Length: 109
Image (cartoon, rainbow, N blue to C red; front, side):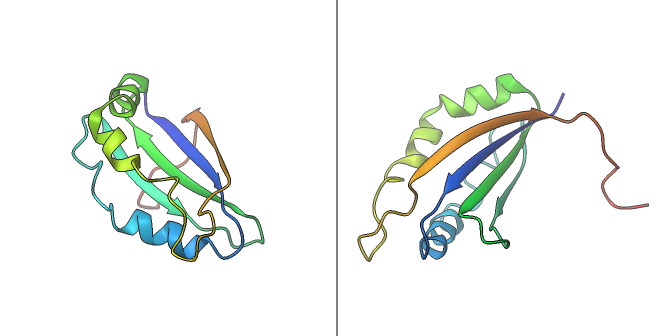
């Protein structure tokens, strides 16, 4: 069963562009991981300061295999590095976990 992992990252005002740049520099880094099904970085449009990193995995085991892999450690090395202006890129994050309980098929009707 597909599982969804959402990393809710709280970003201070003005830090979003740097966060997006860092993710863009790593596009495709997880694509070859066994069980990986997709990724989206969601920018808030309603005044919130939480950006969402949404990933889809075949199952919990596939996610855990990636989260404990050297590739994960390498991809997250320096994540706490400040932005070029010295400000933090993020101030906190939470990992949320979901499974698909319903919905509509992709591709529309």
